Length: 219
Length: 254
View 1: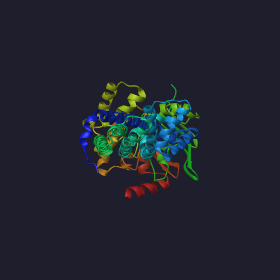
View 2: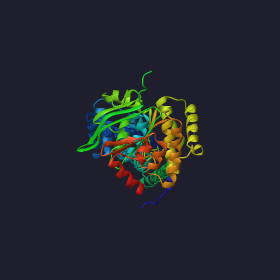
View 3: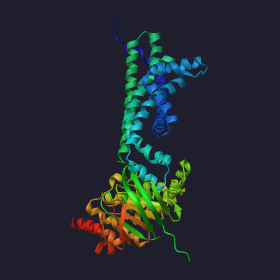
View 4: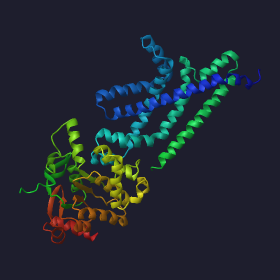
């Protein structure tokens, strides 16, 4: 049995930092997509005419009912075969973003429905239109009320971003694999990367807690 | 000179929820500057009548007019949406449960309408809001969130919010029913002040004393019809209808 020796890690610090960087880029971009499309999907499912709402719901079920890994393969290799060659990073961001948009949409839909009907009446009675009421009053409240649940999704998203290593994006896990292929030291690098993920999530959680506290002020 | 057209006019208003007829043909005319109190037992249709004036309830029959413009016009889709939004900007509505926007501060609650709907400059809207909030006695609460306010304070913010749109008429739907008794007076005082400024008002209320003090005319509704209407002194001192007498007796005994 070989002893553990973490001194093999520091020479690969640059690669690992790049991995952290790409993991953050992936997570932030995919999170933005998952939020924006989450809002859009939720509104479409709730308020759009059936001809639009039903296809979107079907799409949501498909994304919820199939593995993320498969979705990434389909977007990257599948679309590539059809002639839509998307850079791996873009494919990864779209795949992760849409996958989590579906979960966010479901949370937001419940959050929108839970906003008191009096809010709609209060805004409409002032002369705000339907869409304006959603935009200025209903959705902001629904978002505030669902921050804890969507925050949990964000933490899962950060971890699941490791899956895109498989389509060749040099994020953290991919960086570790590179280092391992040269050093044959999987344990040291995987532990290091695990620690890095953990630290990233600690930072993320601290950020989420701050946002939640700011929102609490208005309750 | 032609006779002045009424500020609010309701003609033959009918409303049913399935089998249940809530409004069975209501006629109502409110002159500019007039204050009408609508009283009656729960389920008499008085709130439904008030809510159908600004189309929060859709009538099954009859017409509602505001200052010469029909509110429930036979328009469809986006055309009706534009029409009703424009009409509602001219009617202030105050709800039993305030319906303030909890994610906005007091002053934001008041300025949103003028800024977004009327395109008022932020500075001007803020000035207007501060003026109105001072008027309702809440100048020191401008930056508070609604959750920090008492029920009476919330309702006064709601009144200021409605006034910020400079409405032609104010509709009060049991504005003090959800308040602790000791907070009722501060809201009533604001409404009296509006009355003194000749704001046209329709007030659905359970408070007979307040209705008597502030209204030019009292309407007694029961079972979806206007049973009786007249000056407060007539309705409260010498009601002509038996139903009115029974209702008032029960109410004043309680």
